[in-house]
Each structure stands twice: as structure tokens, then as C-alpha cells.
Image (cartoon, rainbow, N blue to C red; front, top):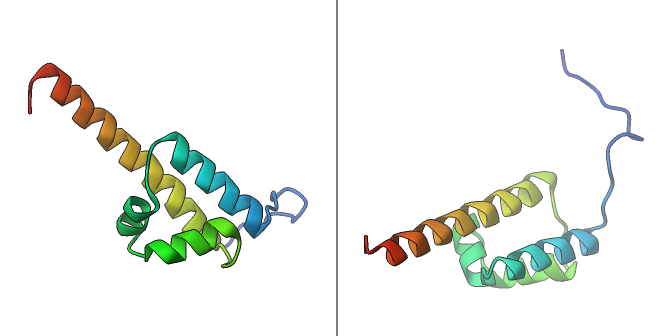
Length: 88
């Protein structure tokens, strides 16, 4: 049996606003469009179009973008720590 949520409880966000949010978070973490696109297995121009609201976000792609940014940031932090500690 599938759980159905009432539409009033599910937050709605425009494609433009979703793109701006992803762009802001990506830039705050120092991740390029190219890096994000490569990790998500899509093209950099497609990421640009998503961020500008020219393409539509799906819930899956939005979730994947957030997850990918988090993973890339964690990897960078780990590499920076290893470099500072002399592991690399």
C-alpha cells in the first residue's frame, strides 16, 4: 500500500528557485558546474540550463544534485585534511 501525502503538506518550489538554490549551494562549496555535471552524469550546459530555470527539475534530479554536492564537498574536505596531515 502506498502512502499518499496531501498536497498541502508537500512544499512546492519553482524551477527557477530550485536552480538558484542549487547554484548558491554549489558556489558556497566551491564546486564548478563541470564537476557537478560530471558527478551527476549530465552535461555542464544542462546544469547551467537547470540553474537558470530553462530546464525543469525533477524531484529525483534535485535530490541527486544536493546529494552530489554534499559528496563532492566531503571528498574535498577529506583530501584537504589528508594533504595538511602529510598523507598525500
